[in-house]
Image (cartoon, rainbow, N blue to C red):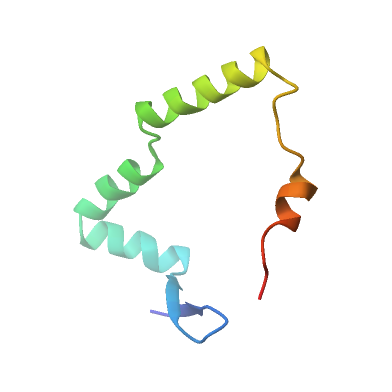
Length: 78
C-alpha cells in the first residue's frame, strides 16, 4: 500500500492520501467501510435546511451582505 501522509506547515500530520486501488481493496476487505463512505457522502437533511434558509434570507435581503474584501482585511494572517 502506497500511502502518502499530508502535513501542515508545522510538520503535523493532518491526513493521509490512499490511492484509489488501495481504497477499493480496503472496502472489499472491510465491508463496513463502504457503508461509512456512503454515510460521509450523504448530506444530512438538517444541513440542507440551513442552506435553504440562508438562500431564502439572501433572496429576500440581497443588499444585506458583507463585502468579502472588507471581511478578509479584518483577519490577521501570520
